[in-house]
Length: 138
Length: 141
Image (tube, rainbow over all chains, first blue to last red; front, side):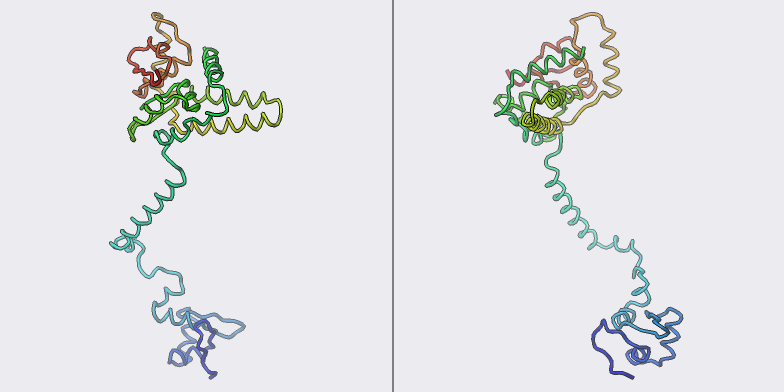
């Protein structure tokens, strides 16, 4: 058997993997064939990622089958999650408020535009025009 | 709910009337300031006309800037459309033969304000005196 690599991202051969897990090669080969252990067959040879083997030892088959380690609903029953969600909601609300400004219809929203034409327009002319327009509606 | 008439919205845009400013500042935070779809139309119609009438590129750019500023102003209000309640008031008003004649724009404003139980703020209080049950105030004089 070759000297075992140390980097968790290194690739192991079947012999390496068996030695690393301290089990016979036959056992690892059987599990690889039955998709019970994270492994890839490349050109007729089985290869194993050390990190994937470590995760598999810790978390079982879910580690490489992209399954949740618990039912997702359990996440929402945790008091920690409630607090976390509350803080995330507050941050989102603050961010949205900063983006959209005051609510339309509030005096703050309206007063932002107070005097928007104070320098560049003829007030009497505009009022007369508006009045004329309303006459014309009839 | 407080509905501001077109003349008041125009005065807001010119920002020269201190009394109007003070009065708006007194509005409570949870009160809704609104314009009717009639005012929305009247304010923007003049801007559209200016864009169409622009004689050169400078006038066109200025007309477009004025349109944008006016649009932002009217969009800062709640915009009230003609709902079923307003249509019902309209039906009653056009049936009525007695009393002074009203301009259609004033009538529609009044109908929308009544349907929303709103106070109508205008400088032209007289234009609305024929409307029963409508609260009207002048915040400028």
